Amino acid sequence: MSLLVTYDAQNIFAKILSGAIPSARVYEDDRTLAFMDAFPQSKGHTLVIPKVDACNLFDIEPADLQNLIVETQRIARAVRDALSPDGVRIMQFNGEAAGQTVFHIHFHILPMWDDQPLGRHAGGGMADINELNALAAQIRAKL
Ligand code: 5GP
Image (cartoon, rainbow, N blue to C red; front, side, top):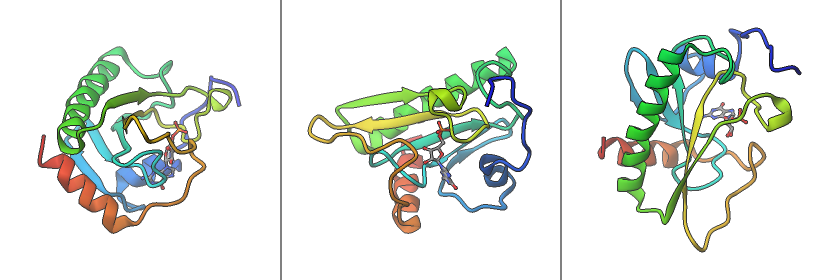
C-alpha cells in the first residue's frame, strides 16, 4: 500500500471515535482522543489520535499535528506519573512498509522498564478490558 492512501472511514480508530467499537478511554476533548492499546506492547501502552480524517504524518494539517503532539506530551506525562517507568518511547508509523497497521494517524506512548523487553508490535495478545480500564483510570487521575 502506498503512502498516498485515501482515508477509510471504516478503519478501526474511526469506529473507536464514533463509539461503534468500545475502548478504554483515558482522555477526550473536541480535537483528541487517548485510549489504551488493546494489544499492548508494555503495561500502559496508550494511543493518542486526532479527530480529523488523516491517515498519516503526510496528510494531517500542521495545526492538527501540532495539537496532537502537544496532547501526546501531556498524556505521556500522566503515563509517566501514573506508572513510574524507567523510560517512555513515543512511536509513530507511516505506511504498511513502516509497520503501520491502522490508517488513522496516531502516536504510541510506550512506558518501558529496564528489565522488561517490549512485546511485539501489533502481534501480541489482547488485553483484558477491565485491566485496561483500570490503567486508563490510573493515567487519567494524573492528568
Ligand atoms: P500501528 O501499527 O498502526 O502503528 O498501530 C495500531 C495499534 O492499534 C496497534 O498497536 C494495535 O495493537 C492497536 N489496535 C488494533 N486494533 C485495536 C482495537 O480494536 N482497539 C485498540 N484499543 N487498539 C487496537
